[in-house]
Image 1 (tube, rainbow, N blue to C red):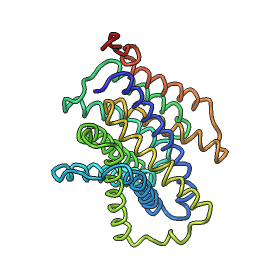
Image 2: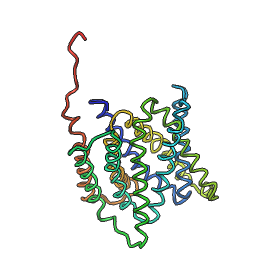
Image 3: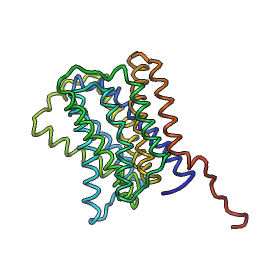
Image 4: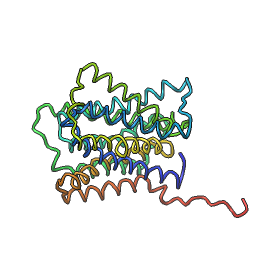
Length: 305
């Protein structure tokens, strides 16, 4: 793991990625009623992929070694096809707040998987940070989690699958993608997810929503492709290159909180005192998990070296 201060910058990048992801949830609400869920995901990934290629190609070669291609394609499939599929299926059965709480188990899943594979070790600080983040999100969204749907367990199961797929991606991407620049990796992986979602839509024959998108909807789509798509995807991959997967995954707990905040700004949804307390708890969890880095002073070489 790279140390202080680059690792702290990586944590900040992951937090910004998660915050932008929360804003993308709000933008998605404009598009989904018109286009449908899968078409919205396809447009987001297709646009983000084109943005990444347009930015990357003039600056560097987008080239993956043949023996690394199955790993990169597999990671792209997990993160940009499997994860959004399970996430979407979950929200068909449970409220978004309940789904966000289940998704907040991802940091602990990531830490456990990384420890089992020898990538990290359990410490009091990182375990406490993961637990505190989960409790903070639960408290912040506690008044919105309930559902009377008898099939709510299906939604929970789908979201656990989404959290686990995200944890698998975090651990293996942080190891497998170190030899490639974040721009190169994301320029390959995002199109993989786009193709997979496109095939699913083709099989289902669910293209009709494209013709139903209004002008405000296309503006939201443009946001989902760029600031709400390409940028957070790049930041997340870059963060995984420069610090441990458990520290990066902890930032996912900012996603539901930021979604509520942006919902209040854009959609005039209420911000409760529980949300503010939960936000403080999430920030405290991030500080707790990174306490060892925050206390560590960067090594300054003696003059003349």
